Length: 363
Image (cartoon, rainbow, N blue to C red; front, side, top):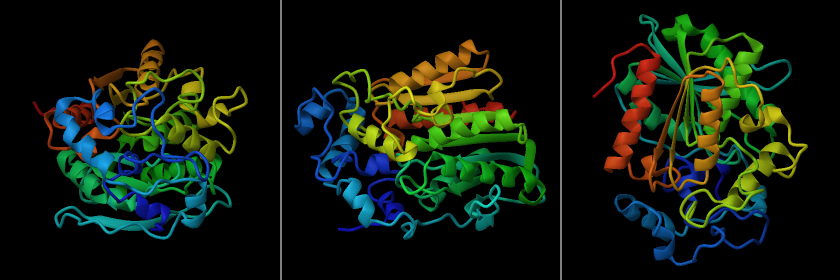
């Protein structure tokens, strides 16, 4: 089965990390499915570190038999062949727009959720996940409608160009173009320029962290908050120190991470020559960044790097809330949304945004 890179994200979940978790992304053409080093290949062994409430969803992921992504399958699947259709809510508006990027860069497609020029509400610039190599903003629209309704806010999500065809230098300018457009068009969208946050999941969380850094450094768009949901922040994860065997038995794995970062960077990850501008965890000066929420599962591959980034933000005098959900895997809140753990996680994320926007939290 050949799929476009945008379409792949819609299979088995809203983000690719969830869709491919059962098979893994091969680092090179012909590689076997990725299994966390030190763990058994059996499903029961891979489920053992997972919270019992999350195991049914994790088992379904492992048993789905999704097609693995490799360098060969990426070559066969064009990056922009269209996203799968999603069923949208009738009472939350969605509009597609094309916005100008910097210099001679191509225009960027964005989707605007819940705009209303008659109001002045908080706004979120959202960036989808997918390991930098797959995924689609369009696939996330139902999720973003629900988020916008819960927060009574405007959301703009960016259809950034995917790696490896576009390296970090291009895709990060795509997301920045979306942010600048949101700020410039705030009156038309009904957005409050003083209450703009960036938010992303997985690789989208990494993009959101990069965007917060870029906004600080360029000084063109003031940000009120950054919501980083199990963000992909450090190219050295899985490329340097070994990962404990109970980590990443379900979800995004070290071989997948290496492949995603290699595609994004255009070079081997983990080395001393990796550009700091592409990797938030490598940045030395975190002072002056907007307040942050970082949420991650305790057995997510990104748990260690996310905790380290939260610690460094705190030491840099950036108000930071860190939530680590014990025994939760990458993307658990999206594939098992009705579990107690996922509901608590989502409530904490939304309440962090409410506090940042000066709104009343939900108890």
